[in-house]
Image 1 (cartoon, rainbow, N blue to C red):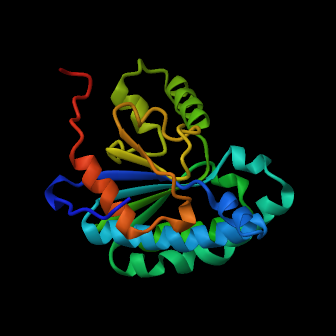
Image 2: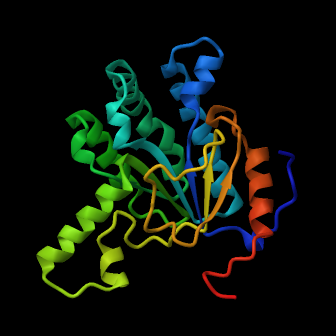
Amino acid sequence: MKSDKIDKDRLPTHIAFIMDGNGRWATKRLLPRKFGHREGVKTMRKIITACVRLGIKVVSLFAFSTENRNRPKDEVAALMQLIRENIYDMLKELIDEGVKVVFMGDLSYFDADIRASLDKVVSESADGEKAVVNIGLNYGSRDEIIRAVNKCVQEGKEVNEEIFASHLYTSGLPDPDLIVRTSGEYRLSNFMLYQAAYSEVIVTNTLWPDFNESELQSILAEYEKRDRRFGKV
C-alpha cells in the first residue's frame, strides 16, 4: 500500500488496531512464535508514537484477548514475559510527553508484579492530556458486555445507551472511528463489538510486525474518502 498525503483536519478521533499476524510472521521465518510477538511489541510502540504525532486523540490496541489464554502454555508464558519486561519501558516516553494510558480487560488474570506495572503506568499517566492510549489486556467484548449488564442489574435502574456505555471499559472514550486489522483476516474477533457499531473498518494483508507508518498514512488517506452516514442516507 503506497503512502498518500493525509488531511490532518479529517483524521479519526479514535483509531483502534487489531494487531494480528505476529505468529505467522515468525513461522514464515522458521522462528518460534514468540519472536513474532517481540517484533509486534516494537511495531506497537512505533505506531502509537506515529498516531500521537499525527494528532490522533485516542489509540486503542488489542494486545491480549480472553481467547489468547487458550493458546499453548509456552506461548502464553512468553506473552506474559513480554508484558512484564516491556509494558512500562515501552510507554514511559509517551507518558513523559503527556499521553494518558488506560487498560481495558480483566486485569485480575495477571500476576501481581504485572498488575503492579500496569497500575504504575496508569498512575503516572493519569494527568496526561495530549492523547489517550487504550490497551486491551485479557480483553474480550462479550465478557465486557456481560460485565456491563451485571453492573446495570446491580444498580436496579432502567438502562439506556448512556448508562450502559458508562459501565464498559471504554467509559469516557469516544467510539472508534476507524478499526484497522492487519494480516488479512476479515473479522472483529470479539473486539469492541458494542463500540464498533458505526466504525469504519480497513483490513490490510500486512502482518503486524511489518506494519509501518507509511502504511498507516495510506490507511488514513483511505479513511478520509469514506462517507460516514451512521445509518442515514
